[in-house]
Each structure stands twice: as C-alpha cells, then as structure tokens.
Amino acid sequence: MPHRRASQHPVPNFFDYLEEKSSPRLPTPQSPSVPFTVTDDWPAFVPISEREIAVLEAHLAQVLDELLGSLP
Image (cartoon, rainbow, N blue to C red; front, top):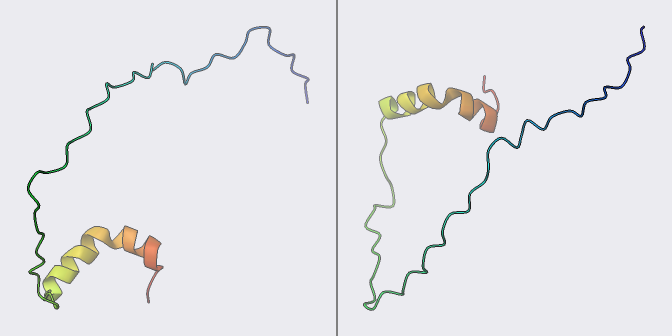
C-alpha cells in the first residue's frame, strides 16, 4: 500500500459558509389584564371509524413501525 504524504494545504472548513445572524429580541408580552377560562368540552370518548384508522395507518405506516415495531 503506497504511503500518502501529508498535504501542505490546510483542509478547508466547509461548514462555515453560512453566517449566523442573531435575530432581534422580541419584547416579553404583558400578562392579560382580563382573566380568561379555558373550557374542555370534548366528550370522554371520541369515536373514530375503521376508515379513519386505515387512512392514518396508510400515511403513518413507517413511523408507526419505528415506534411500535413491526406487528404480525
């Protein structure tokens, strides 16, 4: 195997082509002057049809396999 000589030229850094620009800081929002209430009006059981499950499985099959493992 031939011996390689060390290069006399330094290896360029290809990761410094983009200068990071700091974005201006936004002011902190003030607390609301009027209190508000969040109401959860969803039912305890949300129905879903077999077709909706099939659509989700078709579009998310690869992600579901990675998360849950391959099912028989």
